[in-house]
Amino acid sequence: MIYLFFGYAAVWVLLFAYLLVLSARQRRLEEELQTVRERLAPRE
Image (tube, rainbow, N blue to C red; front, side, top):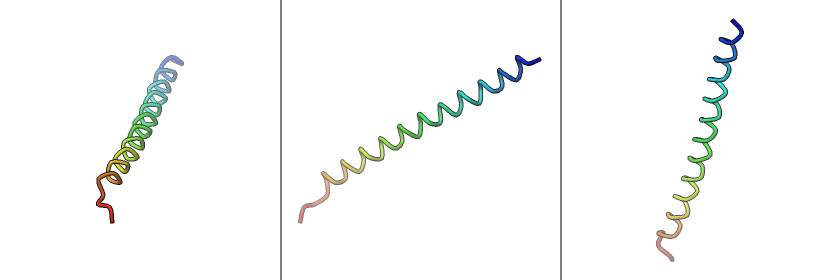
């Protein structure tokens, strides 16, 4: 029955790792978007 616990724990670990990857990807995209906005901003 312990294998059920390890399987359940593995799913949560994988889910958490996936969310960390998505968060890092989102942060990188926001930084890139900010760079593009700065390049496109009208110069005064």
